[in-house]
Image (tube, rainbow, N blue to C red; front, side, top):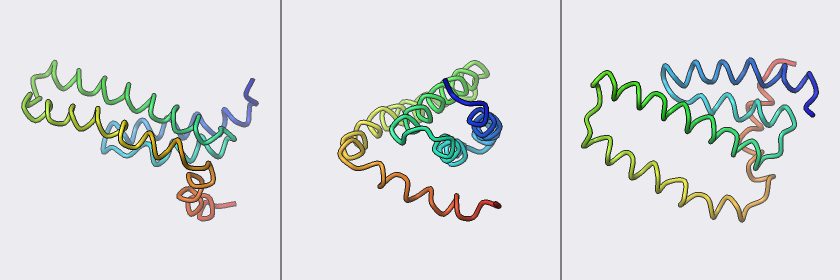
Length: 114
């Protein structure tokens, strides 16, 4: 069971990431380092981040569609790329080491106030 300090790290940052993602996108840049800072293994952090991203995007897409603000031709092209992109990245990610994923997050950890 996760410790209280892990919840205190993850919950505020994931809330902030969801807020930013709904307004401008890119919330994963906040939530992924938070998952990793709480001690979650890299592959679990990536999967958890993808899981929340998929449901946030699906909810936004349904909402736009219900309010008739969606161009279906553009959306269909986007759906094709959204479904093929992760499959192209999955294999190289599974072959690399966790150290490879922690390196992009290092600057954000070093620049955070202590």
